[in-house]
Length: 74
Image (cartoon, rainbow, N blue to C red; front, side, top):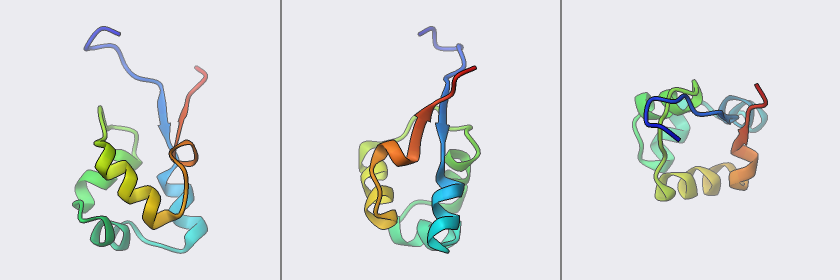
């Protein structure tokens, strides 16, 4: 994939947070990531995610990576 090509990954962080009654701020504190960085992820503006961050998010939301990420069918 060329560096400037847009990715098709969809992040379902907003849905998972709502299902668990958790705020972005609460999750940020638990996974030790800034609210700004989680907001970038939540709003599909992230270009990458560290496995350690993905692991921490999945641990706190009690989910699998596939629950958090999917590929958009454009």
